[in-house]
Length: 380
Image (cartoon, rainbow, N blue to C red; front, side, top):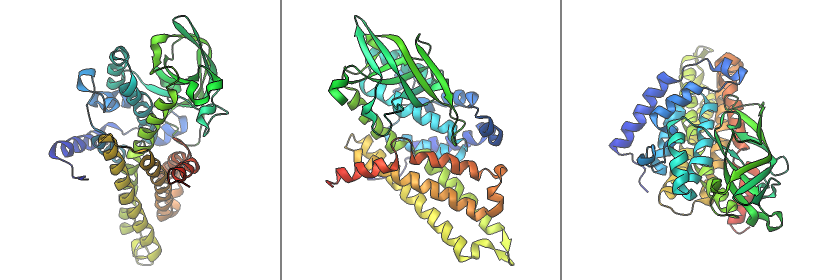
């Protein structure tokens, strides 16, 4: 595996960093407090092609391979401190765009991918339910076929981007008796009659709107089905492999930002007549931050390389998600501790970084679920 970036990739990443430093300058303290989504920032990302990174150029995307995508998203996470906006981008990419690319019909691709790639439309994922979180396939949302339509009924929770989404990937069962074999995916536009959305307040990632979505006799045409009837479990597991493997790419960039910020602070902040970085306990935290950053980056790149080669990556994706999420939280805690009382102030931004990072232990499957999954794949 060669992770050396070529000249074109380096140029792309440098351009993203330079652009993002200028593009994302809003007051995140107020944005976080109010829970406001950066719509203009999303549209600006659309102009750069970021919402369509894996989409072929003929459909309006950038046509990037998996390794280039995570490199670009890592650099974006380094330069853009709005973790919520970036989480919305990841939800859009891994739960809507990549499934469409994988199993969508040509008509579906032509209809949705240009709008999703340009930033004109936002995608969201409706899988989780109040009684079907980690046990995803215990869902109760139903899809009843009548002629050339399916009628959806049910309730979804923790739907990323729901209050701002134009189209959702909705998982429902056509036959509960079949278990996972009855799960089917639908592309449902949020303006469709019978769809209602309620905003959910949450601890972190507050600039990424999350909602609950209800479907009441919601009629969608059969050509809104994504993949075959009963193939929802396959679509979901493939989507989750990409999501777990790539969703924390921008977190690696955030970890680098936190590490460099903490090093600067430790060099400049003096106590007892010397920089605090000279104290062993502070230096040890910085060394641990550096170690977590480098191991996280290697796991991220390896999984992306496997995805780019169309090789099995289910185990690697679970390892990547678990490791980076834990490393991100620990790096935030170390950065806050190094900054002391200053780090505890809201204006410093580190408490927001920590709240944002904590969610990564939960979404895309809790880390406890990742442990069980990894153990099962090891034959335990």
